[in-house]
Image 1: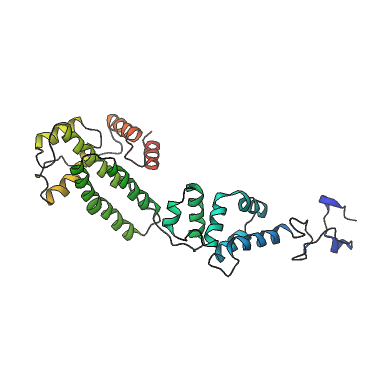
Image 2 (image 1 turned 180 degrees about the vertical axis):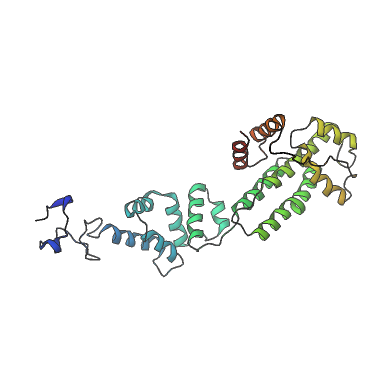
Length: 286
């Protein structure tokens, strides 16, 4: 005879005994969770109330919730999560089903989690979040520049060179995440160089080769990356052509110790470089 309780090896039907409890919805021999329903059926009911059920615009999300491998955890998520509350706002129409409205929502972590859930289930179109963060980063850096002439010049460079090139790379690569470190270093170098010229009471149009040479000698490790900005400015006759040293070619398997330490210092302290790139670069170097 099979022992009763949690150590039982047979269900009530196979053991020839009356069931202790059954789900009033699916009829399975399960412990009731809510209103006489098992945990799975209760989850389906709550998910339908939240999303509008399998036939609504959030039907794919409903299916993902119901199919959760741990239904108790799914219940906790529906009950406590900020992203579940935002999902209810989307289902009711109070929050538009767009990336822009999710970006603007004050509950940033909940909105980001909900975004990933919606994208993963095909409800919301995929987008390149790294590119969006780059655009926001550029806008923030430009807003911090007090000099109107510098800000106007750098906005033109950022719009028609830095961001345009990043968007073109994103379209060509088709990857879910576009590398943005190069774009940030270029714009950061341009901002720093114009600040250096301002400290000398001059501007880009009046800058000389001597100014550039001093910048390369006194500037941060990323100082040579100003070449992209200066090339763009020279093409548009906003500055005279400058002579910059070419990028050193790596000969041999490893960089010299002093070069590696210089790069490590740059990764540690240069906030213009994306944090994830800084951490990855330090792991490789050290």
